[in-house]
Image (cartoon, rainbow, N blue to C red; front, side, top):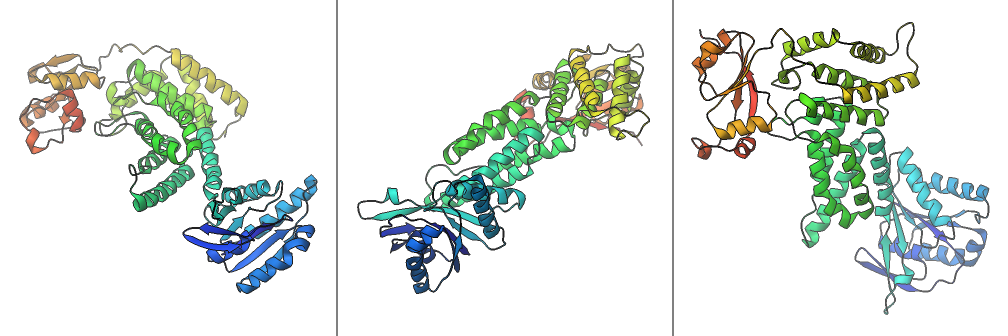
Length: 492
């Protein structure tokens, strides 16, 4: 590791510098740092006046320590050109694979500022996250015994990385780099906590994980994962919202500036978090509109078009056609798409816009970007005001919910299930082709339902032995992973 330090023209007093449990007395902080760390070489940035004043004495100190030391001439920084020259000199010194210890203790006037700017610049363009440590010998903080601490300012440089990546997340939804920085911070805080065991153990792992999973789902347009719970886990948006709240205390204590922007992250995610298991009804429409609006605000027009188009299909769909995952009914979705295609001009125009985007404008009259954005905004405003489609004349069948347990009925209502008939016991002879039966039927009754060309959704639970035979509440059902799973059962 090499040491890069500034030298000034001031009168330096001998003090005892202490850093990372070690001490060394010198009037030059650069010499003390060389002795207190594992540096193998040093570069001293000095103006002509500074080198004439202290250069020989510092060179002798390094010679006594058997550490190679070179002086690099910098300018006084009295004009923008001189500042840019100094910026370039420090950039060349730091833009290597060798780790560096950058000491800004004796940086004069603008020198510490542009030193920080160089580090931030290189961390951005070279993605170097740990090759430079920034330190400062705090002469003004010495005690009565002349003991002077060396402060590690690297966390403030790392703050620039995190801040930049928070900005990227808020502007684009991309969070991979931000999650990596949060994970690294979490590991450092956990190591510090392990040494002292003071206070609660910092917990940032869940925050990093929730950020990454939400961002990945956003990038891949996994609408179901972003917006819907699956019975056992909340949606990715809800998980991130919870993780933001849980991380706030740790970030407030250890990285206060980051904690300040958590409210902006929360405001970004919160509109996506009402818990649902499908996207039917006004609430489902509102969620799809919120997701489309987020994509539009991020400048992600292709995703905006996709979500709007699928949201419009949802207006014509049954619940089974609006819940991506195990309960999704492809045939019902195809029926809804056909209904939308026969609807008004707005729906057809939106489908055309989505196709223009998805086919990358490969047509005779591709829409210009500004027109695409304006149309998407208009479609979004129209979608938010759109009415749910009425049930078509060709009935989609009756939805039965079969249960004698109040907890199951309450759970179904909590999930927003659209039930036409709720019964304690099912008479299979009443079931018609096209109906949907939800419950926990015995195998022989479920087979009769399927034989009548109706659809059977089983209310599945992961019950521990101690809960079997008990009357379960809606909360119990959620705790034991209640979910609907489609089965086709036939008697041999």
